Image 1 (cartoon, rainbow, N blue to C red):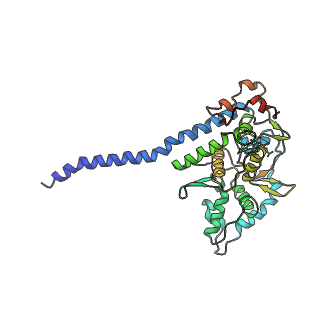
Image 2 (image 1 turned 180 degrees about the vertical axis):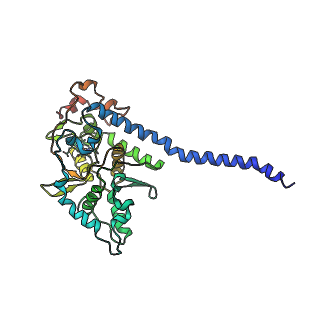
Image 3 (image 1 turned 120 degrees about the vertical axis):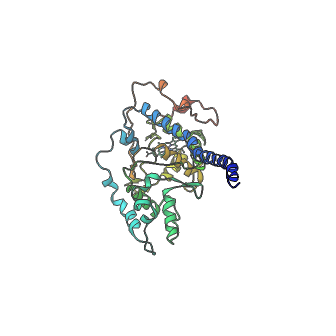
Length: 329
Ligand code: HEC
C-alpha cells in the first residue's frame, strides 16, 4: 500500500517540477531575449561608424574624434596629472571610521569606473559613478556632496576614472527594468526636440566629423569614454553632465539635471554603446580639428541617420535636412 501513494504523486511532482523549471527559465531568459535589442543596436552603431570613418581604429573612438585624427601626441596624462592630486588625496584620506572610498568598490576601486553607470537592481534605477561615491560617503557616516557636477565629487570622479584607464568598458543590463532604462536613454538620444528640432544624433551621428562654427561634431561612439575633461586654462574638470547641459543649451533644448532619471538613462545608453572600447578618461579638453572623412564615399551613399540601422531621427516636426545642413560645414 505504501508505494501507491508516491507512485501517484510522482507524475504530479514531475509536472510541477517541469512547470517550475519552465517558469524559472522564462524569468531567467526573458532579459536575455530582450537584450537582443540593445546588442543589435550596439552592433549597428559600431558598423555605422566603421563604415563612415574607415581610417579610424575602433579603440581610438574612446579618445574622442581629435585623438582619431592624430591630434594627441604622446602621453597627455602628464598635462592633467597635477589636477588629479586633489582627487587622490580625497580617495586615500580615511573617513572618521577608518575606512576609505576604496573599500566601497571591488578591487579597491581599480578598474571599477569601467562598469559605470551601473543599473542598481535594489533601487531599480541607474547609478552614476558620482552617485556611488556619494553613497560610499553616506555609508561611512559622512554627508553626501551637494554638487554632482563641480567640486570634490568631480575630483574624486576624475581620480576613480584614472584608476580604470585602459580597462574595457563593460556596462551590463541585468534586468528588464535596466533594458527599459536603456530604451528610454536611446529614445532621448534619437528624438528631436528643442527650438532647433535637433536630436543628439543629428549632430553626433549624422553630422559627426563636420564643423558647427568652430567646434567639431564628435562621433557619438566613444562619448563618455574619456570624461571628465580637464581644461588647463580654467583648471577645471568638465564632467559629462556639464557637457550634456552645454549641448542641450546649444541646441535650444531644456537642460537636464545630473541626478535626473533622463540624464542617467541617457548616460547608460551612451556608455552601453561604448562597450568593448577601453576607458580613456579623464582627458584633456580637445582642440577642434576635423577628422579624416572617407573621401571616396559620396554623402549621398553614406548611411545617414535617417536610415541608420532602422533607427529614425524621431520627428517632432518635418524638418528639411537641406535647410538644417546649412549650419554645418
Ligand atoms: C547642435 C549640435 C549638437 C547637438 C544637438 C548635441 N551636441 Fe554634443 N557636442 C556638440 C559639439 C560641437 C561638441 C564638441 C565639444 C563642444 O564644443 O562642446 C559636442 C560634444 C559632446 C560630447 C563630448 C564629446 C567628446 O568626445 O569629448 C558629448 C558627450 C556630447 N556632445 C553629447 C551630446 C548629447 C548626449 C546630446 C543630446 C542631448 C548632444 N551632445 C547634442 C554639438 C552638439
